[in-house]
Image 1 (cartoon, rainbow, N blue to C red):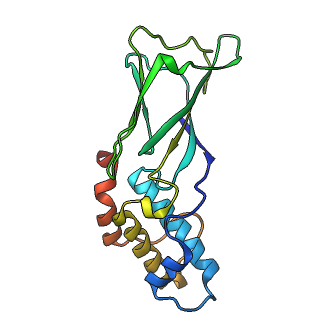
Image 2 (cartoon, rainbow, N blue to C red; image 1 turned 45 degrees about the horizontal axis):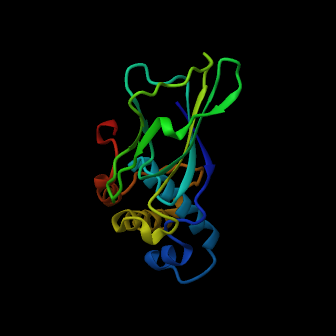
Image 3 (cartoon, helix red, strand yellow; image 1 turned 30 degrees about the vertical axis):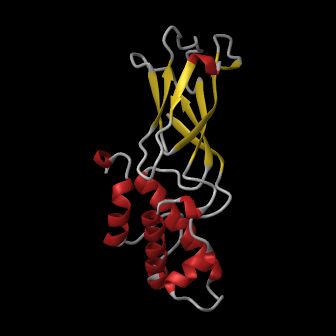
Length: 200
């Protein structure tokens, strides 16, 4: 399975003013640094919980249809919609699968689990080219378009993480990853929202 982000969120879960207020920063000198910390803390929260927070669109590529199951699990809950399912036919031409042949289960709520794309009774998986990434599923996921729609505990965890990163900024290097130990309180706040707890 290969995942690629098609449309990123239009805003962050926590904005600059909220982050500065929580970290008790009253000057503008470090605004650029704090914006980077917001991105880092948000990425950590999404990776740790295995969720999409603000609405975003993804493409999941598969090498084949399920061999025995009649469903495909959709990562990054909460699932909003399946936007398109496509595949490469025997000739290598891209086709769009008819939505009448499947149904979608999209659990909702703060701790919603993964959605599912289920093959309807009497339908079959389309015949595809025997090559990698011959199937793609485009879907939209997230709690909503604004940070206010994300569960409060996740938002608070991101704020706490930002403040901690800012406080330890002299020893922190932003490279797209968190290089220091994440405060226990952050993981404790995020834990109830982790999708696959056995995977951690």
